[in-house]
Length: 105
Image (tube, rainbow, N blue to C red; front, side, top):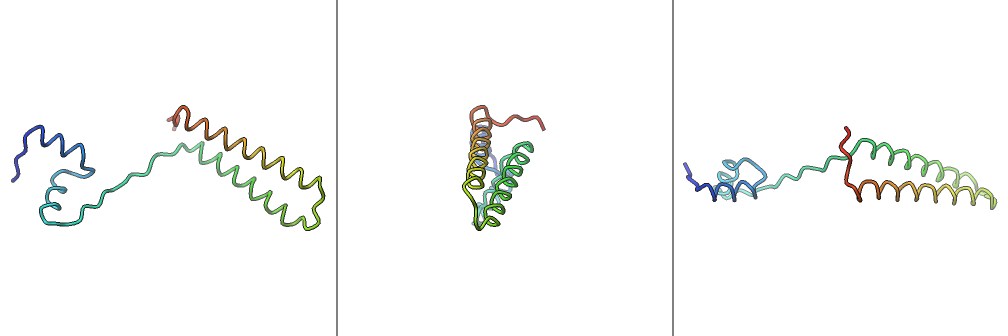
């Protein structure tokens, strides 16, 4: 049994990402401590919007590959769609970085 002061317990608990007993046991046995990193939560709306943008980008890519003899009008349409995709990505970036992620899920 290991006894800790309240200060020692608080200090260890704050820095350890696993149950303190397991950390102390693994440390005492000389085992490698593997820190578990929890992935951040991602807003479902953000994932859906990114998927739609990716779908639009795939459609533009297919269109550009099928247009071997693309005329200037087709290229202009593709370029304008790419600008809209860029604006959408910038809007999402601003929405999710400036204010933080809205937790409406």
